[in-house]
Image 1: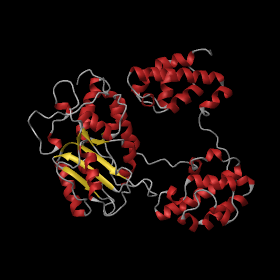
Image 2 (image 1 turned 180 degrees about the vertical axis):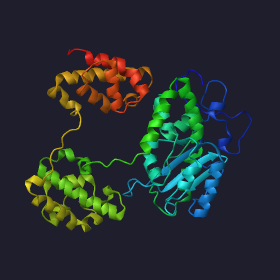
Image 3 (image 1 turned 90 degrees about the vertical axis):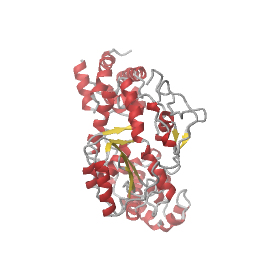
Image 4 (image 1 turned 60 degrees about the horizontal axis):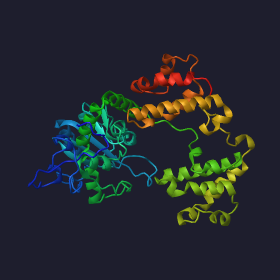
Amino acid sequence: MTDESPLRRRTAQRPAGSEPHHPLERPAASEVAGAPTAPADGPVPLTAPRDGTPAPVATVDALAEVVDRFAAGTGPVAVDAERASGYRYSQRAYLVQLRRAGAGTALIDPLPLPDLAALDAAIADTEWVLHAASQDLPCLADLGLRPRRLFDTELAARLAGFERVGLAALTEALLGFSLEKHHSAADWSTRPLPESWLTYAALDVELLTDLRDVLATELRRQGKWDWAAEEFAALVTWGSQPPKVRAEPWRRTSGIHRVRGARAQARVRALWYARDEIAARRDSAPGRVLPDAAIVAAAELDPRDERALLALSGFNGRSVRRLARIWLDALATARELPDDALPVTPVLDGPPPPHRWAERDPVAAARLARCREVVVRTATAHTLPPENLIAPDSIRRLAWTPPEDLDEESVAATLRGFGARAWQVSLIVAELTTALRAPQG
């Protein structure tokens, strides 16, 4: 690597007079001597895996063969999963993709094969490479796949200072190949999966380990490798824990801030749970059963009959109309609740929203402004997104209730209690302590 900015494009170059049989026969960017430059004809479109698109593995015998192949492979394992978010109620994986040197690419259909513990054991001792790992770790864990070591290419790119951290953007910038992402929002519960979708899925893991190597080199060049190692270890720990059940999930209904009064809030709650029960039974995304906007509209206006209900925006679809009696019953239930059964405004676990600080506690608001300035300045100096330097909620909590002893040791302990990693604390603890000590004004 040179000392050029990490935002500069790294691409492969084909020797003069040569014409590779497949685009991936071009050398990787990390193998090209000298400063990286973009090829004159732009990035090479990658439309097919180098070994062809494999058929989905859907039988026990075929899975056993994949397990043997990947156990005998070498180096890191590229892993990805496809869900059907926006189509299905669950967040389960509907396809799992893997690639490893010496093993090739495998596409596994988890519908007939919901237990992949044998595959997990075969690759347990190697590093897994994922892109945006936090999105896939929960659904992989449901199948018995849990990494012991991982490398997250999206997180690595953030730490290295890249502005565009999507897989396609990084593959183009660092490896010189363009990936099509037009199937990213597809309904992966579809069976059989179209051939073009399978090709798309296989290409998602085709270059992950190459991308990992280039990013690892860049992180080491910038002196950030140890930071990344801490982040990856934290992801492994997070992925091994059961998901947290959110209290009162109905309060996350989009647009609920417009609904005023406990009785109207009860209508949101009743409609939300009625919708959730139907969505779970149908295995359909809740928004496809009834949009959030329709819940909010009904909670605000409280229609009493089917005609008034169906006149509201969001209730005019055929499937929604068929469920009109369910929606009206939910509204009637909320209407009949005694006052002591109405929703109560939750007690905030932490500081209030920042826009209310100035009126609630001007001194704390000034502390927050100083602390945010420290974070932005330090993040800029190290080419980091501020949110990757420290979680915004941690700064708010620190500024609202700082430790009694305003020394670096106490501030560091407080940050660690909020989940900050050692590298994050070491970068900002001194200046944050000074910011917290500063007098008002």
